Image (cartoon, rainbow, N blue to C red; front, side, top):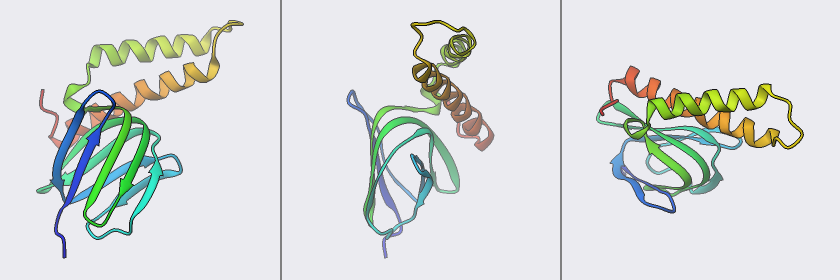
Length: 142
């Protein structure tokens, strides 16, 4: 029986993570899913939110937005449009992005893309949530 999963998180720009872990939780578009070793293989589209993994009793967080997760018996591959470890998130930038997105939603403009503003707000809030979760877990290392 496999005791670990190989978790790989990649974006079009870089490899964010490649590590053996005990558990992976990810934000699928239909809701969060969890993966343990020997899981049945499947493919899922990813939503916006916190991917987390457990290793050695500690929980670590990675912000992800869009893409796909491929799950196998001994591997989870995350092909994300955007992915950042919690410690890589620029807190000031995330706060400013949240403020801009909230302001866009409040203003009524003919040329404003409401769906874009909603998505920007969701990404900003998820980044902040990722930082908060990592701090609470004691794994936020800058």
